[in-house]
Image (cartoon, rainbow, N blue to C red; front, side, top):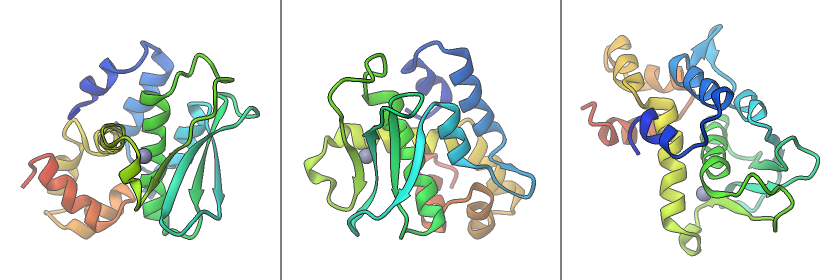
Length: 177
Ligand SMILES: [Zn+2]
């Protein structure tokens, strides 16, 4: 999964959903800051809670009968804001790709992002990361921003609201340099 098109092939043909995702990819920075990933989550019916989680756990998708979709994301509030943004995108990836959203009362499924993910499904973990990367950086978004900022990693990271390290990884993943 390297492009929005690859991603959209995996999703239901829901115009509103695809529109929200495409808009996020097209305009990651608005009104002087990186756009709100929480707003994106809420557009998809996901509530977001910033909570205390075990130190190595970044976030998780939990069932939540009170949210529009039946799911919510819990984010480790002790992590820095740029990591929390990426974690939320990762969990949105699980929500869109890995659960049966037609049955909100199905058994709760906990999909977490943590340092100790070896016991989780590695394919699903990679897909959730790919989702976040494609949404942020795909379809030329990373290469355009990177040249706009004269190949300055820090400024590019600031633009996308992620860490420098995430930009470094994405630059090689998307073969921008
Ligand atoms: Zn995960």
